[in-house]
Amino acid sequence: MTVTQQTESNATAERPSHEAFEAAARSFLDANAVRRPEETFVWGEGSDNVSLFPERTPAEGIADLATARAWAQKTFDAGFGWITGPSEYGGRGLDADYQRIWGRVASEYQTPSQSIYGIGLGMVAPTILAHATDEVKEAYLRKMWRGDIVACQLFSEPSSGSDLASLQTRAVKDGDEWIINGQKVWTSGAQLSDIGEIICRTDPDLPKHRGLTGFVVDMHAPGVEVRPLRQMSGGASFNEVFFTDVRVPASHLLGEVNGGWTVALTTLMNERAAIGGGGGGVGLPASTRLIELARSTGTDTDPLVRQQLAGIIINERVAAYTNRRAMAKIAAGQLPGPEMSLGKMSLTANMIRTYEALSSMLGPKLVADTGAWGTYAWTTYLLGVPGMRIAGGSDEVLRNIIGERVLGLPKEPSPK
Image (cartoon, rainbow, N blue to C red; front, side):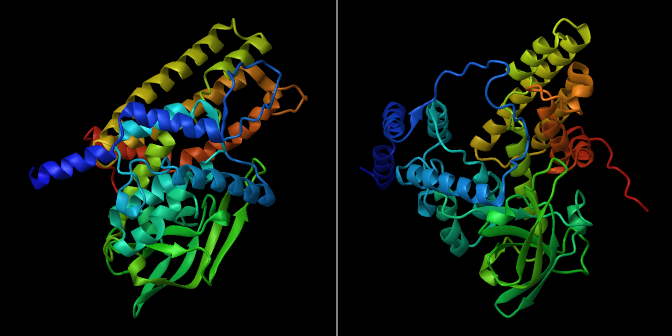
């Protein structure tokens, strides 16, 4: 037997069959979770919360994190935490088919929400895997996927939102460390995070896209201050983060010095993939809940409302097919491309269609609380949509990306 044949034989021995993997997943879930009962939606029963962002108190956030962490650690230790990840960093080294099997089987059980890890695992971890030093990969990837630590994304600034390249947070080299000073804003989950991916300006004399550098920063380091931002929905899911002489080891560099734009694009493409593939916080917004709302308000026979609901369903399904093509590209080992911008824009466009339909069905009840179930509760959804239209790149920026990089249209003129 040749060395190649021996390697392939060993790999096969370590890789279970799909049937054996599914059986192991079911065995684990049967022992540690409860099967999800068949869900039947009954209008007026249960919670009518449809908010896009969590409206937790600080105490609730800490408690939810503890519950999520316990489940993440248990699934990781059982071999179901990072199924497709490289084995040298804590992953199991299996292909995407196994991840799909786990997702399908796990969906049949009631398990704690892992949304607190969404940004870290969906955006920061792929960037660390692609651009970090071996030291950083070994220090953080396993802990992130096991749920031991939470990560956040530190990109936006008060004067640099959609125009990320204009950011002003500075990082200055000092021996084998970098010193960071500046402010970031709209940072989701910063109050619970242990590390963050930050993009800083390291050379103000270079063109703005070229003078940026990415780092992994300790969110508990001296000089890091997190302040919650109160949303118009009443919650505080976002934060502003201040950095005052925060020291970061040179080993925590992401990519090359002044190569931060490439690092940022990796994160943003993964962010748009994560957002575009989501359901927007209330599952399929065009399905049962909206249809039952139309029935309860007597607008289900209104031709305008029926057309609005049909438009939501059609666009939702088209977006899902587009997203599947993009996910297949990622599964094949390619980086997410401009199509992720299309997926994210499709999601927010459907959110706009949703609140237009809500306006038709509810009228004044949408803004005046009558106490009726399933009516005024939609205000939290409406007030969250503007935030979703900004997250991962504003609609205007994404239109430019699609026009220029997908359709090949002329580049938008720069302001004089």
